[in-house]
Length: 196
Length: 215
Length: 176
Image 1 (cartoon, rainbow over the protein chains, first blue to last red):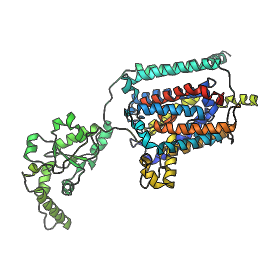
Image 2 (image 1 turned 60 degrees about the vertical axis):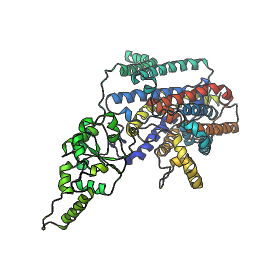
Image 3 (image 1 turned 180 degrees about the horizontal axis):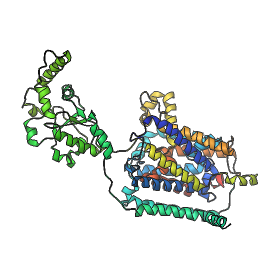
Image 4 (image 1 turned 90 degrees about the horizontal axis):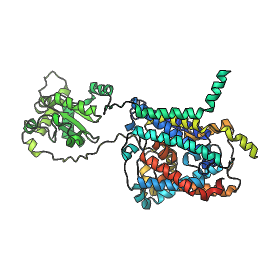
């Protein structure tokens, strides 16, 4: 029963090899979906290209449905998976800073790595900026720590926060995603085309 | 011809079809009959752990660890309270088998700081405690092999080896003799001294989370 | 020029296809390793390594770096670093197949390359700070978090895209 490495079904010696292979597939999919182009990524905010929204929501919906089916069939134990910890204010403020950074720089860390790989100079500059940003954060960690550690809710999921069955959450989430896809196509048909 | 036409119609509607598939899959999760999953480890894994001899700790090893005041040992007496009052190993904590699942003792067995060693008069209660704990997925559980009976025969009142026996047997004997002295032969005052090393156990539920993740 | 780019539009995968494969990859990642994907963690390891090499005492005294420094083990010896190496290779290969590999600055025709690069640097710095505060970026926190219904993942996702739409107007010249 999965996850395989934490349960010792695959030896952890394979960990890094699997990491490289998974990264390889990740990079390939991102690049092939056009995520190495900042103008394509930014399109989601101006309505001329919704690739980000479509890829993002499709993958999240597929992943969550797949994982819960696997859990249902006892192939994987959902409770053993790593759940990103929830620090409400850190997530909101960090997310807002990232939102501004996204619009200014046109990438996020994963996509900027793809852009670096295919020789986009703006991607390289963005990656450099990321490292400077991390450096700045670390240097000012003492003053940022209250925000960083504040309102820790632990490894909670929407099931804990909303107190409804995960299956209903997934169902609602899927409907939201489908509506978003439909809506995005409608918006795109109204917005002036931008070629890049 | 008509086949081609059909395919074309399908392709025109491909997004609707894909959306419908996604919708049905999501709805399927809601509609599937629910069943309660077993908590703890799977039976085959439990079996594997159960037949492994690693879950036993010998009396000699335990004596050695106690003499050296190994701080990672947590002795749990699974006999009744009365028997425990009568005689117990030093620093042992009494959790009678039927109280094993009580909320307030959970912190002692559901942790990963100490090596929990169950003992009873023989193996029986300790083994049962071990199986229940392991079934719930707790780790670091051990059983004192032979229980207190063997403890008496080997540590408190060791058998003098025959003269024909190899030197190791004599070494073992002298070790046991010394250990017996340490624990006090047939002591009853032992249990009144009770817990010189105060064990502070942080009742912290172990999370089964894996690694630190994220970005 | 414009026409040529117009023809180029369809070299990218259908976003639903890409999303579907990415979803499968997330499932596989969770199935194998019990954790999600990530990206900014690798850069963090890179920064920690650089600081640790240049100024070891400073790194040890800093409350944040010291979290990631272990005796006798390089911070680069990390799952996410290996994953990031894979990402570089994968993206390179995909770019090579479709002939997208070229050293260039991509920007809107309305702005200069210099402006684009300055904004890329600013955006990178902001994203770097934000990703550390939120403990993950779009892939690590939002995408992998959403796959296991983590509340934090949804909050981060809403915060990133919500803010994105709020400030989009001010950056429009850079993109449209």
